[in-house]
Length: 354
Image (cartoon, helix red, strand yellow):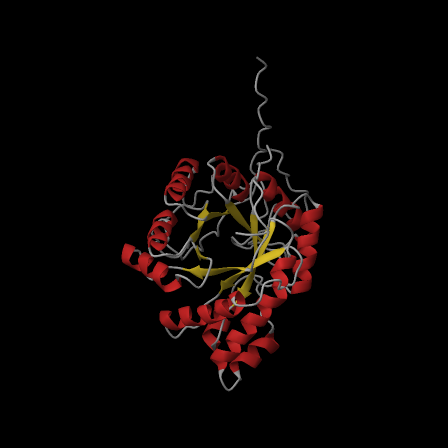
């Protein structure tokens, strides 16, 4: 019997990358090509990045979409099972899934446990798994836990680096990066989504990196906040041309209804909210209604992009209370979900469904 051919080994991590990335750059590159850590130059800017050469994951076909996929960013208010269950109850029945984040500034329950609690209350979860605080053995354990908890999708990201003043004394790990984590998750039989920031430098490498994530096994690409529909269409087209033809795209939608919410979103790298749109919402006689309308219009514009199968409602929505945040997100989602069949999502390419 002939010996089984082994996949080519990964290249070595890029010298000078604080995250030890092989397949970079991450989405944290600042304007001018600076790393998110200390403002030093990103070692992936100005060079040809390593391309993924490992085995391509097999993906089973899925039926065409019936309606837009609507995800909602969600985070339990505290690290308790009761708070995780409350997330499930609050979102049950009106969105397709909650996207559970993994945060650098506080202690969260493991995403697998949040997914288990939310599913018990009737809400599926897409669980973010980041490489920052776990080595490869711990990452594999969390992925196995996500599988046991029947998480809908695992969202594989490299993760943000902590600022020096955030939880000082902790040591980031970054033994893997998003592409290698995607390969690991796919090998365990999990459905995988990934993230990409088309406006982060070097912008000409972003489509190829998204296509490499598809080769490693990703089914969905969540496109970060900040793009216009025209920029999103170019990114989708270029990613398909680079080899990501089967990748399904989910666009992040900025949800805000008050000044503090807009300010929080504006502080995120690369978001760049339209000042005129922010002014229209904040100066409207009813800012809450105006913010909902703005998010619905933005979501519909993204759903008109060929290849986009859904949206992720991101941002504070309302900073008044958790109940108000949920109410705003629900109002946006229900307007999107009640649109007649054959709307823009139906124009997404075959297989673009959750």
